[in-house]
Image (tube, rainbow, N blue to C red; front, side, top):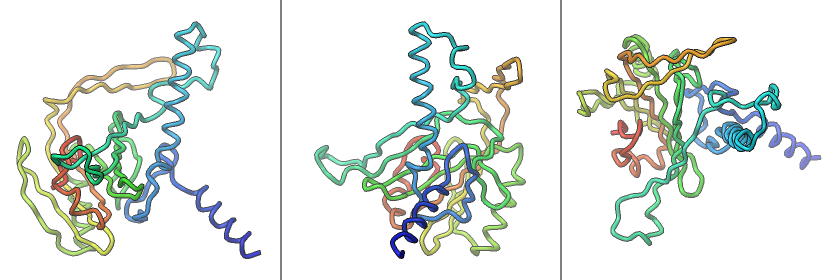
Amino acid sequence: MKKLSLWLIVTLLSCNSPKLGEDILNFEKLDISFGIEDFYSKEFEKSEIFELQKDEILSGKKEEEFGDKLMKFWDFHTIKIDSVYRETWSYSDPGRLIGIQYNMMGWSSGDSLAHYHNMYFEKIDMMNSANGEFMALVAKNESKNRDDFDSLLNYLKQKEGEPTVVKNDFFGVYYNYSWNLNDRYISITSKLNNKKNTLKIDFEINEDSIVMDTIKKPSIDTRLFIINKKYKDSIIGKLHSGDWLFLK
């Protein structure tokens, strides 16, 4: 009976594991042993279906034949998996691999995939260690002004105390506000994005039409980092691409 009860508990927990596209993550309650591969699993499945259907369409099958099971490009998030290595002279060094990143390649501004307090995030990238442990995540929010960022900053100050503040300069000055907690390291930063170096292609999907929007509107970009404290020193300041490069 004890074995059955344990099995039921494990099954229930696995069924309740949050999935991108199905659940809104609460970053404030994030378990540091979070399962990254499981979180993105539904998007990987949708991507695979999309590619299979695309091959069938190229081979002559008509889109109407798929009915409501037809997978469209905007029905899922494309996740690119990248290996991150430390700089070393020896490519055979078994410790050269820092971790595996799961980077979101497309997202919708104003979407709500996760939240921390009253700030919502539309893009989530995560990173696993070489042995599959949660290392870190970075989530991004685009807003018209700093109001939401200031609200989150004040909330974290009240809850976690005064942060460590570091001034950085990357195409303009910005500040990282960080808290070194028991099992995690939290950092937030806010920066004006004038969109000059950004390719913008948004789609407004209506019932019978798709409208493309390429107008670049400046935004305040907020990035939230949650780092497994075990890996803090191995990744801060050592990641040099995407939203990760703001982790200083």
